Image (cartoon, rainbow, N blue to C red):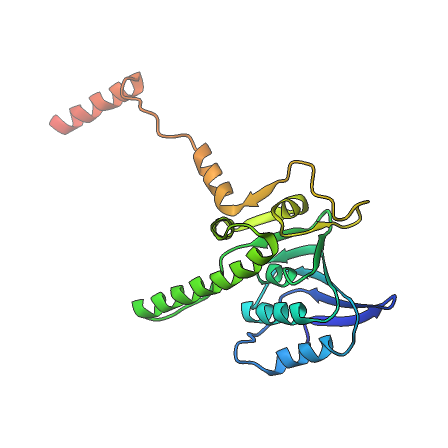
Length: 230
Protein backbone atom coordinates (compact mmCIF):
# COMPACT_ATOMS: atom_id res chain seq x y z
CA UNK A 1 0.00 0.00 0.00
CA UNK A 2 1.44 3.37 -1.05
CA UNK A 3 0.89 5.97 1.64
CA UNK A 4 0.33 9.66 1.00
CA UNK A 5 1.32 10.36 4.62
CA UNK A 6 4.55 10.00 6.57
CA UNK A 7 5.01 9.84 10.35
CA UNK A 8 8.43 10.62 11.83
CA UNK A 9 9.93 11.72 15.14
CA UNK A 10 12.05 14.88 15.15
CA UNK A 11 13.59 16.34 18.30
CA UNK A 12 11.36 14.10 20.41
CA UNK A 13 8.30 15.47 18.63
CA UNK A 14 5.93 13.45 16.47
CA UNK A 15 5.62 14.83 12.95
CA UNK A 16 3.05 13.96 10.30
CA UNK A 17 3.72 15.13 6.77
CA UNK A 18 0.92 15.29 4.22
CA UNK A 19 2.42 16.19 0.86
CA UNK A 20 0.58 15.96 -2.44
CA UNK A 21 -2.93 14.72 -3.13
CA UNK A 22 -4.99 13.37 -0.26
CA UNK A 23 -5.49 9.71 -1.25
CA UNK A 24 -5.34 8.47 -4.84
CA UNK A 25 -8.52 6.47 -4.27
CA UNK A 26 -11.63 7.25 -2.28
CA UNK A 27 -11.96 6.16 1.34
CA UNK A 28 -15.69 5.73 0.81
CA UNK A 29 -16.44 2.18 1.89
CA UNK A 30 -12.71 1.45 2.34
CA UNK A 31 -11.65 0.23 5.78
CA UNK A 32 -8.10 -0.79 4.87
CA UNK A 33 -6.49 2.60 4.20
CA UNK A 34 -8.22 4.48 7.05
CA UNK A 35 -7.25 1.65 9.41
CA UNK A 36 -3.62 1.92 8.30
CA UNK A 37 -3.62 5.68 8.89
CA UNK A 38 -5.20 5.25 12.32
CA UNK A 39 -2.64 2.60 13.25
CA UNK A 40 0.22 4.93 12.31
CA UNK A 41 -1.37 7.83 14.18
CA UNK A 42 -1.90 5.78 17.34
CA UNK A 43 1.49 4.10 17.23
CA UNK A 44 2.92 6.85 19.43
CA UNK A 45 1.84 9.40 22.00
CA UNK A 46 2.44 13.04 22.73
CA UNK A 47 1.85 16.22 20.81
CA UNK A 48 1.97 16.08 17.04
CA UNK A 49 2.85 18.57 14.33
CA UNK A 50 1.15 18.18 10.96
CA UNK A 51 3.04 19.72 8.05
CA UNK A 52 0.55 20.24 5.25
CA UNK A 53 1.15 20.96 1.58
CA UNK A 54 -1.61 19.60 -0.62
CA UNK A 55 -3.92 20.63 -3.47
CA UNK A 56 -6.67 18.53 -1.90
CA UNK A 57 -8.17 15.21 -2.93
CA UNK A 58 -10.77 12.79 -1.65
CA UNK A 59 -13.34 14.47 0.59
CA UNK A 60 -14.07 11.24 2.46
CA UNK A 61 -10.39 10.71 3.25
CA UNK A 62 -10.18 14.31 4.47
CA UNK A 63 -13.22 13.78 6.69
CA UNK A 64 -11.76 10.62 8.26
CA UNK A 65 -8.35 12.24 8.85
CA UNK A 66 -10.05 15.32 10.32
CA UNK A 67 -11.97 13.14 12.78
CA UNK A 68 -8.92 11.09 13.78
CA UNK A 69 -6.85 14.21 14.43
CA UNK A 70 -9.67 15.78 16.45
CA UNK A 71 -9.87 12.62 18.55
CA UNK A 72 -6.09 12.43 19.07
CA UNK A 73 -5.13 12.69 22.72
CA UNK A 74 -2.17 15.07 22.25
CA UNK A 75 -2.11 18.64 20.98
CA UNK A 76 -2.30 18.87 17.19
CA UNK A 77 -0.48 21.77 15.57
CA UNK A 78 -1.02 22.22 11.84
CA UNK A 79 1.69 24.04 9.90
CA UNK A 80 0.92 24.94 6.29
CA UNK A 81 4.17 25.44 4.42
CA UNK A 82 2.83 25.64 0.87
CA UNK A 83 -0.79 25.08 -0.05
CA UNK A 84 -3.81 23.79 1.82
CA UNK A 85 -6.52 23.66 -0.79
CA UNK A 86 -9.89 21.97 -1.06
CA UNK A 87 -9.99 18.79 1.05
CA UNK A 88 -6.60 19.66 2.57
CA UNK A 89 -8.08 22.81 4.06
CA UNK A 90 -10.65 20.62 5.83
CA UNK A 91 -7.85 18.56 7.39
CA UNK A 92 -6.18 21.78 8.51
CA UNK A 93 -9.26 22.69 10.52
CA UNK A 94 -8.51 19.75 12.86
CA UNK A 95 -5.55 21.58 14.36
CA UNK A 96 -5.71 22.93 17.89
CA UNK A 97 -3.45 25.59 16.44
CA UNK A 98 -3.08 26.40 12.74
CA UNK A 99 0.02 28.28 11.62
CA UNK A 100 0.81 29.29 8.05
CA UNK A 101 4.06 30.22 6.37
CA UNK A 102 4.24 33.84 5.19
CA UNK A 103 4.28 32.49 1.62
CA UNK A 104 1.57 29.84 1.98
CA UNK A 105 -2.03 29.84 0.81
CA UNK A 106 -5.38 28.30 1.63
CA UNK A 107 -8.10 27.65 -0.96
CA UNK A 108 -11.71 26.79 -0.22
CA UNK A 109 -14.39 25.99 -2.80
CA UNK A 110 -17.51 23.94 -3.41
CA UNK A 111 -17.16 20.16 -3.70
CA UNK A 112 -17.28 18.75 -7.22
CA UNK A 113 -17.84 15.38 -8.83
CA UNK A 114 -18.46 13.70 -12.18
CA UNK A 115 -21.89 12.25 -12.82
CA UNK A 116 -23.36 10.35 -15.76
CA UNK A 117 -27.02 9.60 -16.24
CA UNK A 118 -30.46 11.09 -16.72
CA UNK A 119 -31.91 14.20 -15.11
CA UNK A 120 -32.84 12.30 -11.96
CA UNK A 121 -29.25 11.13 -11.60
CA UNK A 122 -28.04 14.72 -12.03
CA UNK A 123 -30.41 15.88 -9.31
CA UNK A 124 -29.15 13.15 -6.98
CA UNK A 125 -25.59 14.24 -7.68
CA UNK A 126 -26.51 17.84 -6.86
CA UNK A 127 -28.19 16.79 -3.63
CA UNK A 128 -25.11 14.80 -2.63
CA UNK A 129 -22.80 17.74 -3.37
CA UNK A 130 -25.06 20.06 -1.38
CA UNK A 131 -24.84 17.72 1.62
CA UNK A 132 -21.07 17.43 1.28
CA UNK A 133 -20.83 21.21 1.24
CA UNK A 134 -22.84 21.44 4.47
CA UNK A 135 -20.43 19.01 6.13
CA UNK A 136 -17.42 21.01 4.99
CA UNK A 137 -19.03 24.22 6.24
CA UNK A 138 -19.43 22.52 9.64
CA UNK A 139 -15.63 22.20 9.94
CA UNK A 140 -14.98 25.77 8.78
CA UNK A 141 -17.68 27.20 11.05
CA UNK A 142 -16.38 25.35 14.09
CA UNK A 143 -12.92 26.83 13.56
CA UNK A 144 -13.70 30.35 12.34
CA UNK A 145 -17.01 31.20 13.97
CA UNK A 146 -18.07 32.85 10.71
CA UNK A 147 -21.74 32.76 9.66
CA UNK A 148 -22.58 29.80 7.44
CA UNK A 149 -23.86 32.11 4.72
CA UNK A 150 -20.51 33.91 4.63
CA UNK A 151 -18.58 30.65 4.45
CA UNK A 152 -20.89 29.44 1.69
CA UNK A 153 -20.26 32.64 -0.27
CA UNK A 154 -16.49 32.24 0.06
CA UNK A 155 -16.78 28.65 -1.17
CA UNK A 156 -18.98 29.70 -4.10
CA UNK A 157 -16.31 32.17 -5.16
CA UNK A 158 -13.49 29.61 -4.89
CA UNK A 159 -11.51 31.86 -2.56
CA UNK A 160 -7.75 31.82 -2.11
CA UNK A 161 -6.43 33.29 1.15
CA UNK A 162 -2.93 34.55 1.77
CA UNK A 163 -1.76 34.03 5.34
CA UNK A 164 -2.93 37.40 6.62
CA UNK A 165 -6.41 36.97 5.21
CA UNK A 166 -6.62 33.45 6.62
CA UNK A 167 -5.72 34.79 10.07
CA UNK A 168 -8.11 37.71 9.69
CA UNK A 169 -11.03 35.39 8.85
CA UNK A 170 -10.12 32.83 11.52
CA UNK A 171 -9.04 30.00 9.22
CA UNK A 172 -5.56 30.22 10.76
CA UNK A 173 -4.26 31.30 14.16
CA UNK A 174 -0.89 32.77 13.31
CA UNK A 175 2.10 33.19 11.03
CA UNK A 176 5.15 30.98 11.11
CA UNK A 177 8.58 32.52 11.69
CA UNK A 178 7.17 35.76 13.11
CA UNK A 179 8.14 37.06 16.55
CA UNK A 180 4.61 36.52 17.79
CA UNK A 181 3.16 33.67 15.74
CA UNK A 182 -0.35 34.15 17.08
CA UNK A 183 -0.62 37.92 16.59
CA UNK A 184 -3.63 39.07 14.60
CA UNK A 185 -2.76 40.39 11.17
CA UNK A 186 -2.36 44.18 11.22
CA UNK A 187 -1.75 44.80 7.51
CA UNK A 188 -4.54 45.00 4.97
CA UNK A 189 -5.19 41.35 4.06
CA UNK A 190 -5.82 40.31 0.48
CA UNK A 191 -8.24 37.66 -0.72
CA UNK A 192 -8.35 36.23 -4.22
CA UNK A 193 -11.64 35.03 -5.65
CA UNK A 194 -11.68 33.31 -9.03
CA UNK A 195 -15.28 34.37 -9.61
CA UNK A 196 -14.70 37.99 -8.59
CA UNK A 197 -11.53 38.15 -10.67
CA UNK A 198 -13.37 36.83 -13.73
CA UNK A 199 -16.22 39.31 -13.24
CA UNK A 200 -13.73 42.13 -12.78
CA UNK A 201 -12.06 41.32 -16.10
CA UNK A 202 -15.42 41.09 -17.86
CA UNK A 203 -16.43 44.47 -16.47
CA UNK A 204 -13.28 46.02 -17.91
CA UNK A 205 -14.28 45.00 -21.46
CA UNK A 206 -15.57 48.16 -23.18
CA UNK A 207 -19.31 48.16 -23.70
CA UNK A 208 -20.64 48.47 -27.25
CA UNK A 209 -20.73 52.14 -28.10
CA UNK A 210 -23.68 53.77 -29.79
CA UNK A 211 -22.36 55.30 -33.03
CA UNK A 212 -25.64 56.12 -34.79
CA UNK A 213 -24.68 59.78 -35.03
CA UNK A 214 -21.20 59.17 -36.32
CA UNK A 215 -20.14 59.82 -39.90
CA UNK A 216 -18.98 56.22 -40.31
CA UNK A 217 -22.39 54.85 -39.37
CA UNK A 218 -24.21 57.31 -41.65
CA UNK A 219 -21.99 56.33 -44.55
CA UNK A 220 -22.51 52.63 -43.88
CA UNK A 221 -26.27 53.12 -43.52
CA UNK A 222 -26.43 54.96 -46.85
CA UNK A 223 -24.55 52.16 -48.63
CA UNK A 224 -26.83 49.51 -47.15
CA UNK A 225 -29.93 51.40 -48.23
CA UNK A 226 -28.61 51.70 -51.76
CA UNK A 227 -28.00 47.95 -51.87
CA UNK A 228 -31.35 47.18 -50.26
CA UNK A 229 -33.58 49.25 -52.54
CA UNK A 230 -31.68 48.99 -55.83
